[in-house]
Each structure stands twice: as structure tokens, then as C-alpha cells.
Image (cartoon, rainbow, N blue to C red; front, side, top):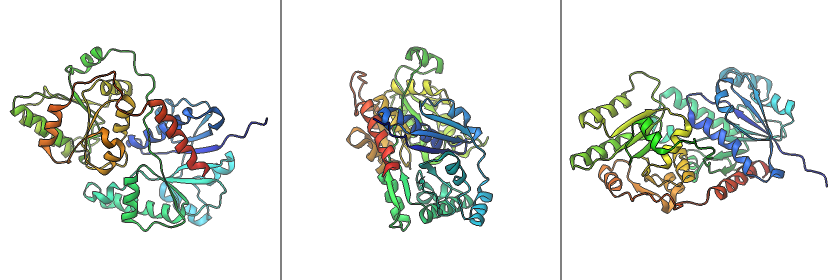
Amino acid sequence: MVQKERLKLGLIFNFDPVWMGGSIYLTNSIRIFKFLEDKDMPKIFVFYNPLLKNFIDEIDYPYAEFIPHQFPRLYKGYIQSWLKGKNVFVDDLIAEYHLDAVFPMHEYPVKSKSKAKLVSWYADLQHMRYPEFWSKKKRAGRYAKIRFILNNSKDLVLSSQAVKDDFNHFFKMPKSLKVHIYHFVSIIEGLPDVSIEDLREKYGLKENYFMISNQFHKHKNHKVVFEAVAMLKKKGIPVNIAITGRFPVAENSPYLSQLHDIVNENNLKDQISFLGLIPRGDQLMLMKYSQAIIQPSLFEGWSTVIEDARSLQVPVIASSLPVNIEQLQEKGTYFEPFDVETLANHLVNAPKRDFGVDLYEPYEDRMKKAAYELLNVFLD
């Protein structure tokens, strides 16, 4: 019996190094294929920006080739594509490596004449829902990029039904465009061989704590959590919060200053711990043994933090965004994003953790289901 040839899939690993979400998304998109049957695993060619090599070094996949690549500068690449009538970001790679498909396509200045299946991806439309969080220049750039994708792409992957609903709300979607919803999952491998007691000592945490793992952007809405902790303190009820996430690049971040003001004005330094960007293994262990993970965000396309919680079997207290409800369904505990009192009540009434109880679908089942869901995007 002749072994069928593996699908040759090119992955474009070219994100702003500051944007952790994009790099984590694509890293997991590669690693998820390990949950396929061997006969179904594609051969993956990862074309990566050398600035992202630290992410590449963490990927273990048996049929992968990692190729450093200098992608064209954005504006120059668009102009060259228009002049040459081909997509200079990927067309030469497709020809050289005989690729059957490419993902994720962010730069789509022209329709491609290649026979390869080129699949676009867009994380979310936060800039449309919350334009006040974005500069006019960045909003214009995102809008233009989306217009090129909608005009020139045949396949588009979105992270959730909520994002698809936003696209249908803000844009007239071409009938020729096939929209796929791929629900990203978090792959948890090799938690560090360290006790939670040692980790708590390392980071100065008390035995019982809740956890927030978001970057310090205003739409992540840490403020509502801080205000809930302050409200409970006035009632004599201590609640402890551990916060991980990359601190803002700007030295004088107004948002981070606002959070510190709440801490200082309410004397919460012993209850709210800013841990910064810590090793991934440490972060996951702290998540696993927290009372619950809090996801207070005002906007998400599909929350990586919630997916981490599901993979670790940790309860989640989340803002009542449609996308959060789409992820957690009846398993989540919800509050309106600015409802301090309801959140405070959830914190007080959070049940004691029973680490022997699985809250969500079994890990291996979820991973395999997601792997075939993503693979089918390139086979349809």
C-alpha cells in the first residue's frame, strides 16, 4: 500500500514581537497537529521572522522545517505586489517549497494566481468596537488590511462566532469568501517539577489567591477587579489577587498608573501582587492552583487565558461578553464588565477548589477535536 503524500503547509510566523497573542496562537496551531493520527499530520514549513526565534525554539513537531525569512517591508511589499501582479509576501515561497496551503495570510494586496490554498486569519475587530483604544493611523491600517483580505482572499479563519458576527455587522462579506471558525485551544505540556508551595514562596503569594493573566491594556479591565477587592476590604473581607502579564513599554503608562493609584489609595499592596512576565511554566502552575482565573476584559476575540483555564481544569469568573459565554457556556461564572458588586460577591462565594474534579471536556478529546478542525480548513 502506497503511503499518501503529506499535505505541505506553509505557516507565516511574522508578528510584532510585542503582540504575544499572535505568536502564542500560531505556536499552538503548529503543536496542535501532534494530536492528529500520524498519517494525517501535515509537513509544515514555518517561515519565521528571526526576531521571533525564541517562540520557534519552543515548538516540537515531528514533520516541521523551520526557515528564517526576511519578509518584505509592509508598504514596499504591497507596491511590489501591485506592480508585479503577484503576492510577493508568499508566492515565491509557494513555488520554491511546492506548498499546498499557506496560513495565516495577513498581507493580501492582490488575488493570487497560485494553486495553493491561501487562508487568511484575523483575530478580532476590537478597533471597530472600541476605536477610542486605537490611534487613527492604526485604525486606518487595520481597516485597509481587512479590506484587502475581503477583496482578494477565498478563505478566512476567525476565532469565534462572536468575531464572525462582528465581521457581518461592520462589513459586507463577499459571497465567494468561505469563513471558517477555528476555536483555538491551549496546549499544556511539561509543567515544571516544582511544588505549588515553593512557587507561592518564590512569588510571595498567600495560600488562597485568584489570578489575572492579561497584558496591561485598558480594555483588559483590571480596574473592576481592583475596585471589587477594595470594596471587600472595607467590609473586612481580604481577597488576594496575583497578576501576570507584560508591563507596558511606555514608562509612564496612564492605565498602569491608574491601577497603582487604586492599590495605594486603598492600601491593597498586601493583596494585589504584580508579578510581571514570568516563565510560562510558572504561570500555568500558579493558574492551576488558584481559586479561579478572572477574565474581566471588555473585549476578546477568543481568550487564550480562558483556554488555559479549560486545559488546566480551573474555574473562571469572566465578564459577560458573548465570546466568553461562547467559550465557557454554563461552566463560567459571569458579571457585567463594570459591575463591581457582583464581581465582589463572586469572589467571596467562590467554592473551595476540589482538584480531583474535572470541570470541562477531557483534555485529550479537546486537543484531537481541535486538531482535525484546523486540518479540515486546508482540506475543504
